[in-house]
Image (cartoon, rainbow, N blue to C red; front, side, top):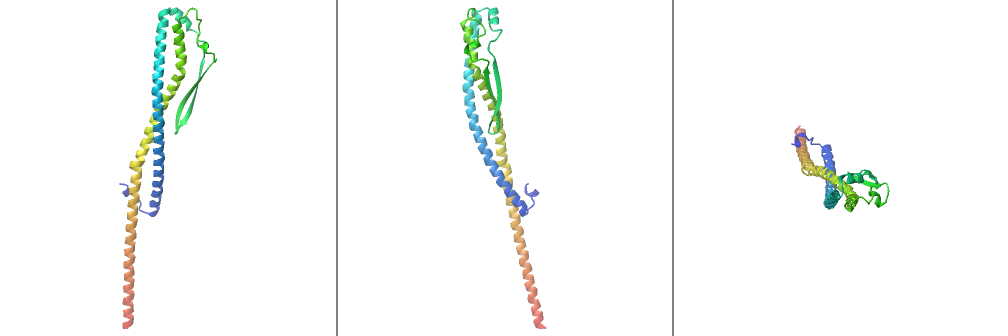
Length: 222
């Protein structure tokens, strides 16, 4: 029990009241943080679902084009065409803070801005299906990076939401009720002590008055 470890003094009562005010303020802030995290988490989940469908659709189209290219070209010609990539991609990573959660961010740039630099082969001995497959890969690259951002952000934010939820529940169901119970206990103890002191003072006063009355009676009889 919390009462067994509480020292029923006014100093302890003041300390607990300050602790209760701080706990309630922290509880409100954490609830607001949890609600905002949930709002942004649900927005990311919706975006993640749309990106996942878009990327999977692009990958299926790319695979289909590669299968068609492989069917229309020899394996040696396909390997030679893709042996030496012409374009280079540079990935830059960073973080951005969302409600105290560090979310990864990815950005990329290519060596050149020419859209035709993605083709590392000539068009004379290759299939148009190979061109479409390579173009499909280049087109879905930004979406794949954004999908990676969203999925990692969802994982981190889900963990933070769970951590915040546990803290909110601990404050709401454990710390705040226990502190309020301790405050009630100490207040009752202090009131009881005050009443006991008043009773003792009244008894002492009555004894002193009675003693003074008997003293006057003795003086008068003498």
